[in-house]
Length: 272
Image 1 (cartoon, helix red, strand yellow):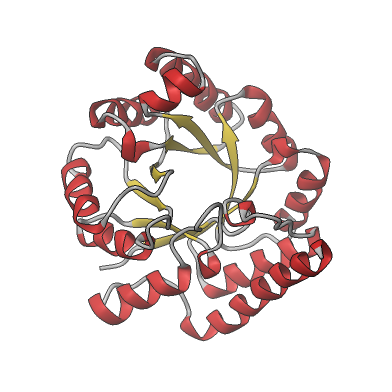
Image 2 (cartoon, helix red, strand yellow):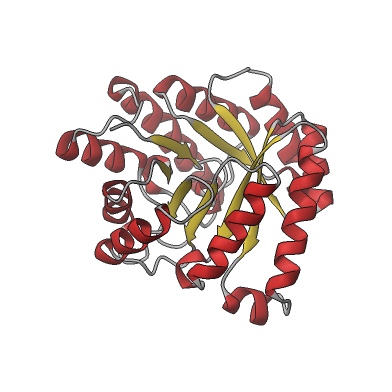
């Protein structure tokens, strides 16, 4: 069995408290990720502003082999910023739990579907390849997650991210959910797992055992709150314990980890 790693060190990883990578650090990390063999690199959020856009253009200029993805809300303004940077691969994220839709945004499920349709169609009109993201999917109604996937598939999305946004899954539940969703979902599922209970790597392994072929990771497991599934741990567990091929070149991991570690350390020193 072979799976694909979608690395989000430069987007979700950078959401670690106090962490801000420089443009040069982002380019170096992206090149190291590419050399290590990740399938895709979620490079950042162009809508954040000019500094972020400059750094992202620097990454795109290297013409990496991996898919280099811009993360966006379901907003034409976000997507236009990504297109203006030169992105071809566009990730569009929408909330799917009623907790987020009703209480955080004060909107409805139908509003989510309308915004997703419009945003995906807008990105596709520029010839972009698009992916959907389902925020807070682990606390959402499964039927609505599947509706979001169907909606995205109809407009040409290539996959959907199932995000355990608050890190509330455990491995047995992860396996059960993924096994149930995989056969019913209109799109290939990518799992995105947070480490609030120290289970992100275990949940990633459980998802792959259930047949999921795309796993979101960060180098060293860095990220907001307790972090994300660790690229190194997920790769080692899947390869050594289950014989799953990840495409990751093990010999490149020390150099990659060193680049990220030094960039994180530089931010810590500047904050002192």
